[in-house]
Length: 440
Image 1 (tube, helix red, strand yellow):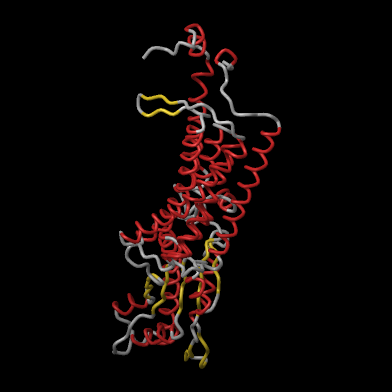
Image 2 (cartoon, one colour; image 1 turned 180 degrees about the horizontal axis):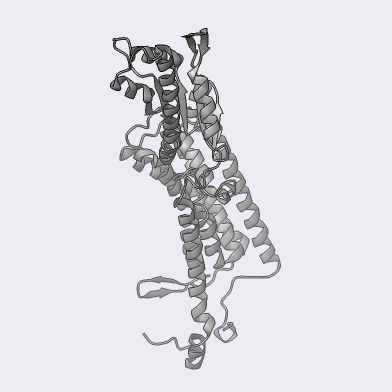
């Protein structure tokens, strides 16, 4: 392909020989990808190391029982001992171990405020003492059960963390209770009767730990990932949709060239202010948002995704797409081509690792928790998760998501109106820079 006639060969050579021509794309891409790698890999490699304020409940319903000793009867409550041992052994700086009742625990599990709950039943001590008696007296007996409820609706990765935290802690407790129970049996027998080997093995590990999900997710939720991918779709519809609207409208208004394969088109520039151009783009985005949100919902439900609050999901989806798209277009209006990088960093590079959708925020470095306070991806995920998994509530997650989405929309509106009006008043009209005056 021959060079354009209006570009002199000596100028073309000068541009190509300029170090900035080669360094600019290399440096920008290298820095962005380094930031991407640091944030993404730094957030997933060692979640247990970065645990902080990870909420798990311990529900002690044990009513205790009376133990007969040589000194007489005395009250015993193994549930209290286990609770105290867990509180002492579970690192308080990593796990927020909440001692609450069963009703409150269920409510917090339903709303996604807890990743798990350890429940000690009311007859726990009584069953342990029956197990001790059964070691020397024939009869059928079952080990007492401690139930660990996981919460897949709060995040599937959180299920694994709950198991990793409670498993070793309860194993230690099981050993200590076993030692205590064995010592009590030996003391009561006084060496006159030998406990069988099988009975001693049972006494050494007297607790049966049962791990079970609380309110399991239905089929069609991608094992708890559907909320994340749906939220990502909404964010991409606003972010990439805004980019496409920006490029196409600028091309049709003559502010930027457009290429279709080998065909190069550069329409004559239309006399229109920056502010009105932005209003046109916003209007297109407002039409697209409910349309795309409806398409997402229709396609997702058609292929099997449960949507218990379909109307609310469509409405919030349209709102989120509008807010992200309007803000992305405002950033482009303010920063021009550099706005592409700003949007990429804001909505993708910083957004995905701080979303809390795949790995809980409480299992990532604290900087991610700070980013989650304002990053759009986290807010959108909270809203979608509340509508798909948490009955539309989620301890105020939906209300929080709507509020923060509205704040983001307001910021985009203010930024866009302020900057484009200022540019128009200063006479920074959009035009074509002559080749001979362009900076090298």
